[in-house]
Length: 155
Image (cartoon, rainbow, N blue to C red; front, side, top):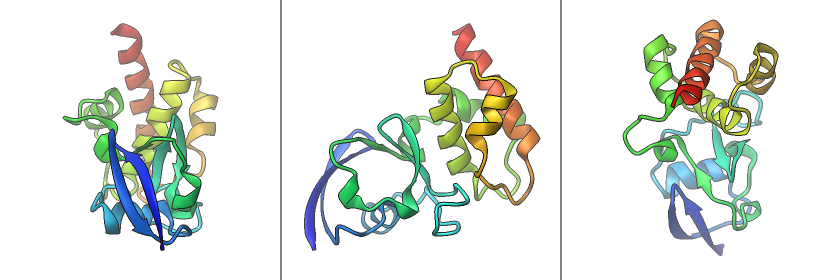
């Protein structure tokens, strides 16, 4: 066991965990932030996506020891009231079916729009590649990202 001080959703938390513990389990089991989902456990499906700094990362394979000083943002920390442009677009377009993958999809999409406020279709597809939606809502996901991008340019 080791002591770690990490910043999650704007708050610094002190933890005593094994350094090899994946961030996913730190978030879910130690911090009770259960919006980040376990999907495959091998960083291939995207359900566990969070932001590390400004980058979307798969938390199931990210050991807490590698976080360092970078801030972690989960779906719970993306916006206080669920009013992030991507979250609003997700509702407007009615993206989710089962909803299991949606936190990871939203976190990936919001990181994309932060780095590229007006992505092309190819850029959206490239960024979202590997985020698996078993319900197949990919067309609505792309439309919601475009809606959120348009809202950002109109703001």
